[in-house]
Length: 399
Ligand code: PMP
Image 1: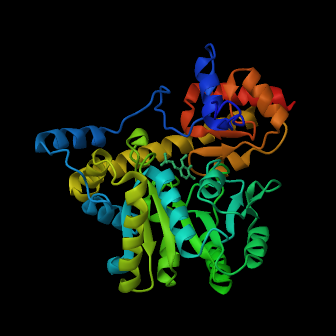
Image 2: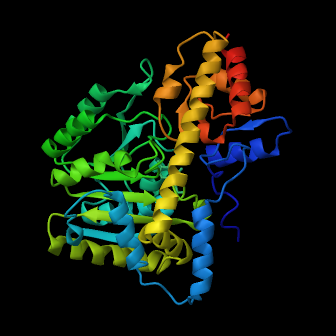
Image 3: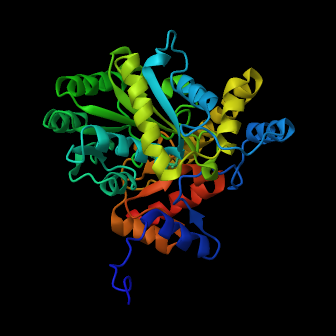
């Protein structure tokens, strides 16, 4: 028998496929495909504070026994408290939190949770555009109606708040809306605090469910509190909502797959029920999560000295990205490249939507300057030197 030869061809992942191509390309080249932080020399950079935490971990001589189904409770607690940095009287007992396999795993748990509460006919609304994996996460969790709301205005290269509010106002009751907490991927455009309040208004009025995807807290501004303003607004307004947190970027723990799904509930009773359901979802999927990343993160978050050191390193990464944006924009201005490039410094977080057409992005790729065909570039991958080269490349392809 031959069960599987006739399977349809797999869908290639655009990001990982292009990254492999970029990695294989000859030097000189600029690889801005993957959202991963690089230092001033373009090298991957494990955080010093994580190295320290590793040493502490080793000295503690901990065992490799299973974690509980929901993961390391101290980690989950520290993760939730980090999300709400600066919040006094956090209603922790109303927040159910479980460890997840990084941000992707938290989103997937959230999807499974909604599938089991309001069902797979719940309409799911993703920003247009959004992180490439969101759609598949919800489709593979069984949702039949995965849609988009307007998010990006290609003229202003900022948030199309009017379009967004209109689309959300038309969403059926109970629809799930996915919101990027900060540093929207791929556009680098975030709502202002005033706009977050308008978004909250429409979510409240339309009785929408909310999932915040938080993959970049601390990366947008270098300040954990500033970057989580949206979560604090929804908390203060008494919403029920989910938050998917990732420590891949802000702690540089990409391959440790460490994240947290928290669900803010109306009551303590609800949060206990939610916690139980999440355990029931996790157990048949992967039984329980790995401990290593959770231990590193909790050491850093719970120890005052390590925490302070981390926040300095985090700010250093955010600042370097901001610096690269400035070099790139200034160089484009210097070259008198046709068009306005202010959006590059206005956008925040790891990525820039450069505002290039598919043909222009392809032309950059042909020059071995690898940006996505959507014009998305990981600014974190630039150095002072390559930022200037990229500007020259952009100048050539837009003329
Ligand atoms: N959400 C968004 C918006 C992201 O950009 C990312 C990282 N690319 C993730 C979630 C999850 O990443 P990870 O699973 O590595 O934490």
